[in-house]
Length: 331
Ligand code: ACO
Image 1 (cartoon, rainbow, N blue to C red):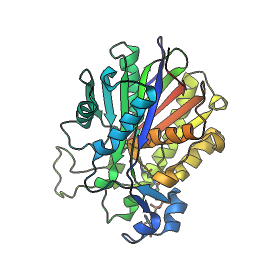
Image 2 (cartoon, rainbow, N blue to C red):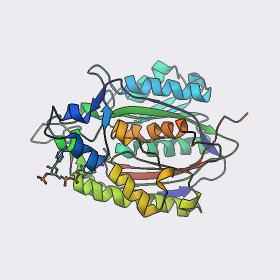
Image 3 (cartoon, protein in one colour):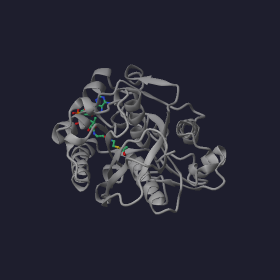
Image 4 (cartoon, rainbow, N blue to C red):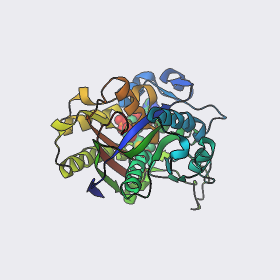
C-alpha cells in the first residue's frame, strides 16, 4: 500500500514513552547463555536493554507512556475517540490491551483495539489513525506501540535472547494547521513469515507445544536490509521528496548493522539518524516512539522538520511514514 495524504492535515501533537526500570546488560546475559558482550556489541550494537518485572505486563508499561503523551499534547483522555495499540505481547488476547487501557485512562467515547504487525506495528497503527482522522470518523486518536518480548523469548536460546528488550511509546494524533503526515508505504509478505514466528501462540496446532519466538536471523537480516531501503525510497518518491529533504531519520531499532546498511544505501547522513538500539535493544512496536523521544530530547524535532520513519518485522511486514513535524497544537 502506497499513498500520499489528501485534504485535511493530520499530525502528531503529543509523545510519551516508558521503559521498565530493570536494566539487563550484555555481561549479565552472558551469565544466562553462552555469549559475550563483545559478540553482542559487534553483531548488533546492543549494550543493554530493559526487562519487565515478573508482574509487569504490556499495559503496565504502556500506561505511563500513554499518560505522558496525553499530557504532552494537553489533551484530556475523555476527548480521545480512537485508541489503537500495536503489540505482539498484549496482556492477553482478550480483553484487548487497548480496551483495558481506554478504561483505565478514562476514555468512554473511544473505539479501542489491538493491532498485530510485528515490529512494524507502530507504523501500521499511525497509518490506521491517520485514515480514521482524515476521513472524519475520529477527531482525536491515541496510538500506542509497545512490547514485552522478554515474556515470549526462549531464555535458553542465545540467538534471539540477546536481541530484544521491553518498552512502549504513545502519540496523540489530530488535525493540525501546518505540517503533518505526507504519506505512507506499508507491505506484508507472509511467504517469509516462517523466518520470524511464534508457533503455538494461536489456534494452529503444533505437535511440539513449546511456545517461544523462533527466528532465522540471517534471512531476517537479508529481508530487513532490503525493505528498509525500498520502503524509504518508495515513500520519498511518492511524496516528491529526496533523502536530502529528510531532517530526521527514525529507523526501527533492531540491529545497528541493519541501520548502518540502510543509512549507507539510502545516502542519509548518519548524523540525521536516530540510534538507541545500544540502550534498549529491539523493543518491537516500542522502538520507533522511543527513538522519536530521543530525537526530541536532542532538539531535532523542530517545527517543520521532515521526519522519515521506517519499520520492519514479523509477518514479514514493513512500513514507512513521512511527516512534517508540528510543535504545538492548533489554536
Ligand atoms: N552469542 C554468541 N554467538 C552467537 C550468538 C550469541 N548471542 N547467537 C548466535 N551465535 C553464533 C551462531 O551460533 C553462529 O555460530 P556458528 O558459526 O558456530 O554456527 C555464529 O554466532 C554466527 O551466527 P549468525 O547467525 O551467522 O550471525 P549473524 O552475523 O547473522 O548475526 C544476528 C546474527 C545478530 C541475529 C543477525 O542475523 C540479525 O541481526 N538478524 C536480524 C534479526 C532481527 O532484526 N530480528 C528482529 C526483526 S523485527 C521483529 O518483528 C521482532
